[in-house]
Length: 155
Ligand code: FES
Ligand code: FES
Image 1 (cartoon, rainbow, N blue to C red):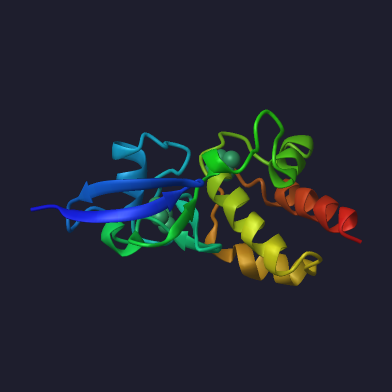
Image 2 (cartoon, protein in one colour):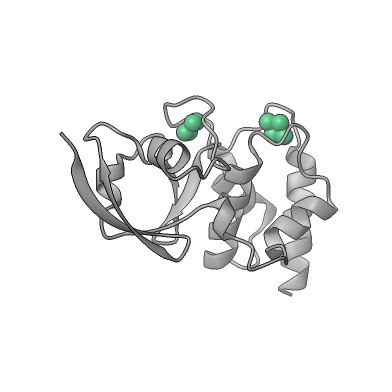
């Protein structure tokens, strides 16, 4: 049995039939071939699968695709308009805020949501907001530097 959904993904309206137990992450990666969102833990702990749902960061491994019905999803693939990087992507690049890159799309999507709601967060607010995004390579200092540079641009 499949369930029909209509979802706006990266600005494109998509009609699809999904399995009742299919996660949003599985739908994005397996059906839509949007593989920038990664599965790390699969249980809502690591943040590598973070996407924006109606502008809010969500662990897509925990959300059923059926619950995306009528919602707007943004993934890392939808962040950069054309050939220009999004400012958050640019800041991560300039500060080498990644090593293997496995956590990076989730980190960037969470940072995007943070900066949208709080353009000049304190270091403590950044740490708190990103506490659900784990980097096994330990690039936290570089991530902080990237976000600090974004805050300075917003000053
Ligand atoms: S894979 Fe979703 S939180 Fe880890
Ligand atoms: S850059 Fe490797 S897990 Fe974060």
